[in-house]
Image (cartoon, rainbow, N blue to C red; front, side, top):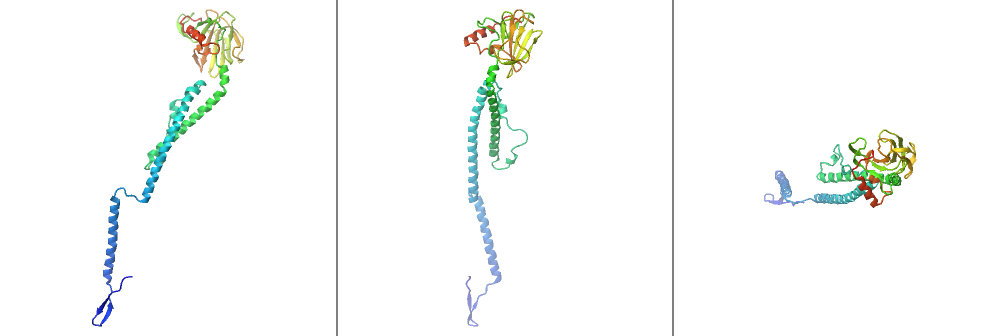
Length: 324
């Protein structure tokens, strides 16, 4: 409460109250208000131009952002560790499991391909830290896709493992005729002189010389796909072993099986002959895998020692004249 001021009136010989002038009071009030505004403006300019001055709220936001960046860095580090473990599993999958079960390896392009099409991360754009968020999200998506591919691959391997016993019984693994002394192998796989056509051509199998009516054995469990006479191969048996394998037995004298019949490894399916384009009694034997001819020398592991295999391998590489 403001003090009341008085003055002495000599005419009335008494004290009178001093009344403030209205104009002066208004001017003082206006001046005071302008002083406050000017002071606030100056303080605001000073505040905005002083570096590293932050409000408590700004400090809290900054701490939150720094913590977010730290968490994203930790997340990326953990993802790198997971990727290293996954790469190890992928390598074993391609080079051990899929090789063992004769499955085609999965290419790096297929495993590590990204996501095409529209911008999947458009909703993450427009922020101060959009790039780190987008990069982390992309890494998670790629990792998830690789895990899905690897999971499906392991499911496939598990299914193949269940069929491994059947595969081992079906895959060609023995010589098609008795050849204990290893002297019946007459011509191997490769470029050979044809005895009738008289020019060098690819010899797609191995020739085993043997007397007519020598027993011919199925080299693995199979179903008889063909058992009929042909022009070039003469009497021919084709066995379907499954798993992409087929074996051919040509120039036979007689059949001991019929089309559609199931046979076991070591079972007699026919007898050596001299039919078709043949110059002497022998068995022409071929192995096919997924429709392509392969060298039969790789499929005698069931009845050859390492030393015997070396002898057979050396004999098969000699470039001589084939018997068909």
